[in-house]
Length: 356
Image 1 (tube, rainbow, N blue to C red):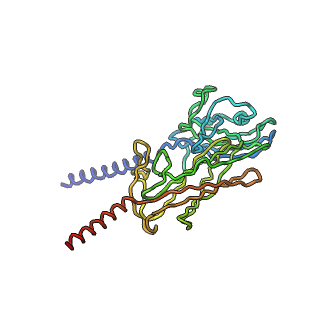
Image 2 (cartoon, rainbow, N blue to C red):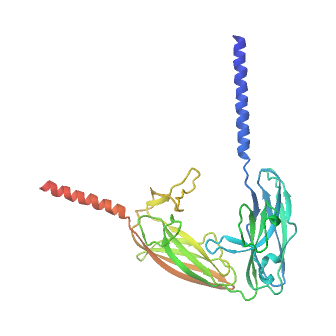
Image 3 (cartoon, rainbow, N blue to C red):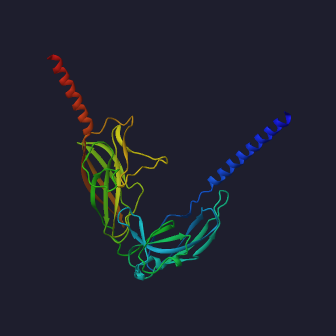
């Protein structure tokens, strides 16, 4: 019997250590997540004169699962005209306008050890920018891009646009002094559903929130940062004030950019349906799935006509300029109204029926 008990004890102990070891190994495996390569800072800005030389430094970290050789190269870019996302390209640009040609990298490849919590094993990329004497005044844009693939093996001159894929880059926004102009206009300002992918204009909503879409156009030859506010009125009363462009996104030269604000009022409103990772669930057409929710402390539900006034300001050299626009929309909870009408009608019918 003692021998049998010993066997049971040893077996249990072995199983215990096996479980602990397996759990520990699993935990260690879970900790090893390939996060790719990271680069900082994300944006560097320069104001320069023709003939001037400036220098800078960026940091590259390897957060993959092993030591890597990381390549670095430079490409010009332009705005996508919607969200401000850079579109890189290999198209030929005259030397006096091509920032890519002005940038010199001290080194184009680095062997970077895998980053660990206890040690900083990042690589430092030193670069310099020499502005030609005949450089065009205004904005010039390029990215210093880090990649795990040798760019010489995948690029061909004049191949057109390049996608970022898993690469990371630092954006260089450079403004050359001279005849520099910035001129912003409001091309569009309208209300739309924040859950619709196409962001089409919509003037009547059954519930909050309401998306306010702004499209700005910069016809100048350099970039600028538009800032301002959207004030919401109901009749003559101010209901809310929304800060415009809180992320301080820039509009590049000769391009447009779309900004979206969200106005919400009342305790009954739509909210996105989230998955297990708290990300909005999208339908096949790209629209965000939504549900009606109730939030206490938000006042009564929204109802009636609202007016939104947009004011955008920007710096043009030493001068501060501003532009304004206005739009209006209705919030009519028609489903609730129909239910109330049905209840009232049923009550009246019941009273009449009772009298008879």
